[in-house]
Length: 158
View 1 (cartoon, helix red, strand yellow):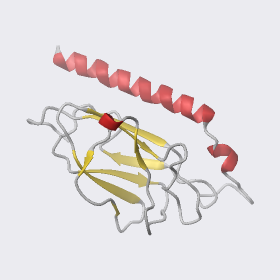
View 2 (cartoon, rainbow, N blue to C red):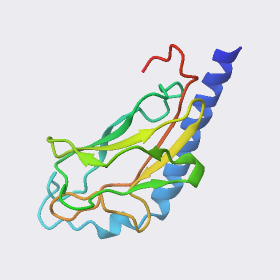
View 3 (tube, one colour):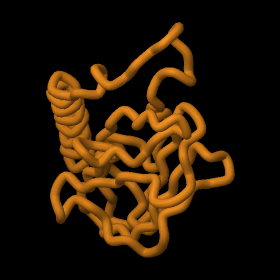
View 4 (cartoon, rainbow, N blue to C red):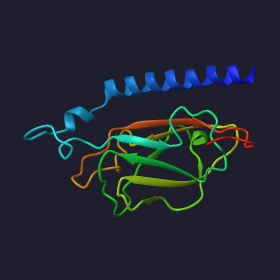
């Protein structure tokens, strides 16, 4: 019964994320800000999220996971405060346990966290006026909503 309930919860989260992303995309000013001078290229277009740890929609994340990471489609600006991890609500953003950092690949940013068991987290990566995730050319990354839930903490597979 619990497995079926968790699958329903995961499906609801995925539907909610898709719905919110669709709504946000419809109101987003981002497409108007992207200027393409010559042709479509990786350099001319904004970076996008290609991977997160944990994965968006995971409903059994190990609460002992000490970091959340996001990897972008191209190199990012890594000097100074070049990230925008934003909570959907205060209680859906994890407690921080260390400094945020970029890995040497210049594409992966790591947020050091202390997660709680059996809790849902919802974190915007760039949103509204908080657009500090940028490539070296100053293009803000496309906003992305990361939603996941931690498990009980016993025998949880990551």
